[in-house]
Every structure is written in C-alpha cells, then in structure tokens.
Image (cartoon, rainbow, N blue to C red; front, side, top):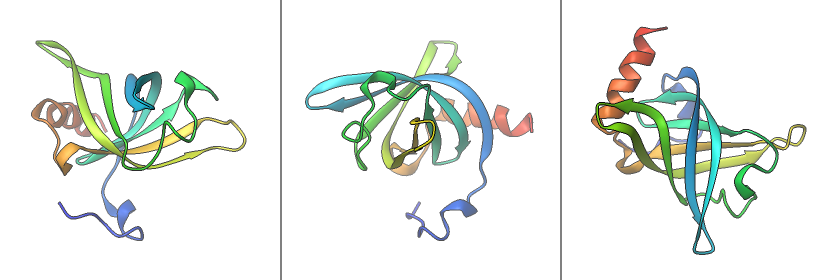
Length: 126
C-alpha cells in the first residue's frame, strides 16, 4: 500500500475503539513501556493516546517518527495476547492535557491475520 499524501490520509475509513494496550518502544537502547488507549483503528494502522501526562517516561525522544513500536493486549486469540508491530508515523503532545497522541502504521503496511480478525469484529459491531 503506498503512503498517502497528508491531504488524503484521513480518507481511509477508521473505526473508533477504546481498548487499553501495552506499548513498547526503544529509547537510548532501553525499553520504554507504557499503557496507552487505542482510540481508532483501520486496515493499516491505529491511533494511540497516553493515559496521563508522563506515561512510561513518554517524552519527545520516545515518540520520534520512524521509531519501532509494539502493541500488546489489543486482542487475544486461542494462543493468548497477541502483539502487533509498527512504526510511529506522527506524534504530538496535547498542550492542555499533556497526553501524547501517536499514529502507528503496522509493519509492512499489512496487518497480521489475527489483527484482521479483530478489525472484522470492530467493523461488525458498528
């Protein structure tokens, strides 16, 4: 899937969700983990929001564009909690709440089959 121009990026259909997930990224060679809300999903990515102003040591260095991130506990299957990996596409900190909002593109631009199953459930519930 080619990367969309910024003016077209919102044309992809999104489905709102509210799921608490565990996110992990590397910063300075060490793992930074934090709980984040998954706010919406689509076929190629998702939008995250931090729980509080300083969740998991989240600062600008932790949320740099292109940084790898993994999201766990978003959905479960017969093997337990599944993990999806992706790349940070954008991040900004809300000046009022100081919470971080982060856009994640799934690795390879293609979602794993278990994520597609999760997305199917989300779509059918709307």
